[in-house]
Length: 200
Image (cartoon, rainbow, N blue to C red):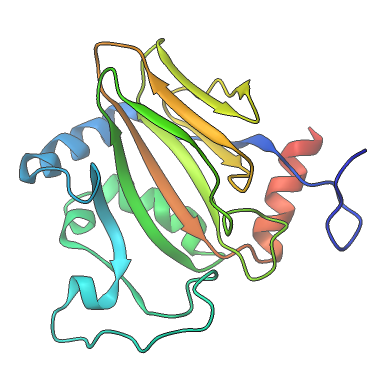
């Protein structure tokens, strides 16, 4: 039986969205900022909580619910300021909704991300965020499994994945895998974009 959201729509497990971004430009900008090194579990933050970007901004007070990102302000980091093309990708979505956390995520050759779930990263979850994934560097030995099914993401593509479901990643190649991930608030524009892509 299909799982339904509150308005009777099916829960979308995965869908490739109708965007394709220029890989060479993303790679060039990524190589420029990566000279400073990946941080925080092999990630470079491009948008982050304001207090992490500007030390003069106080740490936000504790929140009852962190799921939708409203517990803090979000700011572009110096890394993003050095990446005009990647910034323009984020603007495609920020023009229509609130974009929160944005990162470059690196998975080293031979590395594995064990199966896990992200309880607040699903379109059907109340007060959730969603995550879009845009591969930048990927090789034929990278395997991303969602619900034990392979998701064939290629460089430059843009995907929505329901990450509240079990997922894992294996980089069986000799080259690193790097994705751009964009977390955002799923407003009406976002919902329509995802369901429209899923219906095509």
